Image (cartoon, rainbow, N blue to C red; front, side):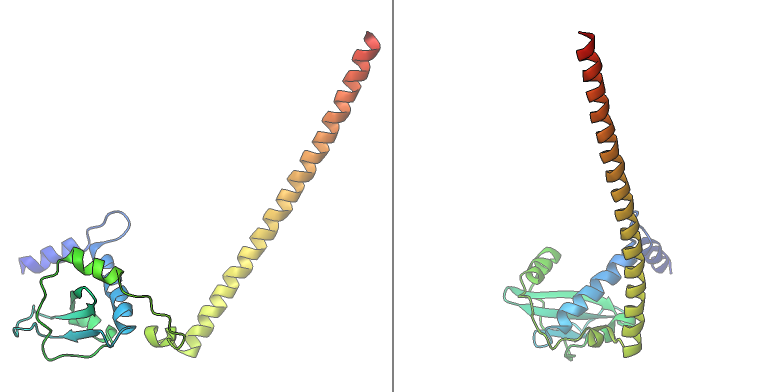
Amino acid sequence: MEDNINQEVIGEISDGYHTFNELYHHRAVLFSIICNDRPNLSWKSKLHHDGTMYDGMFIVGINTKDGQATYHYDIEPYWNMFNVPELPMAPEWDGHTPSEAIERISKLDIIQNEDKNLDKVFNLTDQNWASMYEMVSEKLQKVEIKLEKARESIDKLIGINYNMSQEIINLEREIDKITFNNF
């Protein structure tokens, strides 16, 4: 019981921007996108190669040119996020460290697949896309209005500066005339 409380408390520790729980979730989402884009290289399993597993967790991995990159995640809510082949048991761990895993992931080739639809990755419907389009359009209109007001303000400042410059030039001419006439 005490370990669960400590885990809950630790998960809510923040650096002032994100909690551990948020960063863990972000990592899961990002790794799922990487794996889902490469289902022929990726896999998931509820058991390690030796038949063991941490309570309520599973392992997901991707095979790279340099070896495996794997992570453990809670079955809920992450299992269904990974649309990759399920294996009865995970391949034997190759001994990679967390640093090696992220280095291996960073060396994966970029996939350029025009057939990949974001709606499949994020389960978006036409209604979701329409709502997002509408929201972005509204925000864009507001930005355009603010930009136009900024342009008008700049034009006014330029006009004021031009008029002031002309007035300064005229004053300098008057000063020159007065000075010339006095000598």
